[in-house]
Image 1 (tube, one colour):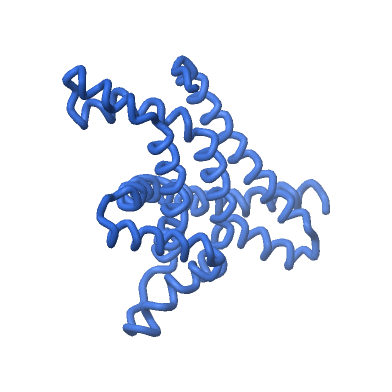
Image 2 (cartoon, rainbow, N blue to C red):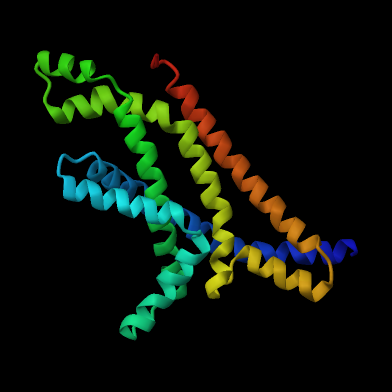
Amino acid sequence: MNFENILNTFEILFSGIGTTLQIFIISLIFSIPFGVLIALGRNSKNKVLSGMMNLYILIIRGTPIMLQIIFVYFAPYYLFKISYDRFLAMILALVLNYGAYFAEIFRTGINSIPKGQYEAAFTLGMNKKITFFRIILPQVIKRILPAMSNEVISLTKTTSLAQVIGVTEMFALAQKQASYQFSIMPVCIAGIFYLALCGIITIIFHYFEKRLSYYKIV
């Protein structure tokens, strides 16, 4: 493969990175608050709600993400004869999947805070809202950042599964080019794009870890 072909491959794959980034960013934006809701539901004193959240997390964590993507897109058609956009289906599948994983991270972080801190805050006259946002949340964020960075990086790479339901993103273009050129170079170039994106995410999380390093976690 000559330099001109390599440059042309870069341009083709770059045209698909926009779709990859859209899938990643939109899924991340919705899966984080969804994960918080699931975590709160699992911590609920309502046994029915808590049990439903436990079952949901078990199903999501116990089945392949590829199967979930296929189910989310095709199930509405086979069950209700309803078809919808493939891009939207991919977003929904990722939100449902990563929401469950984020929920476990949030739940672990919240439960790791000693109850004495809640009691001390209430003694000082703070209500639940102030206690959570000013006392508990900063510590929770600091504790869950490493685990969150792992899941966010994982989400970045999982966007490549969009091709399963026919969404043309960067990796789908790389595979088409690899087949057309009879070379693995396009796939390797796609790997460079993913590596660069994961590197940027790592730097961002490292920055926030430094900013929050003044919280002393025991």
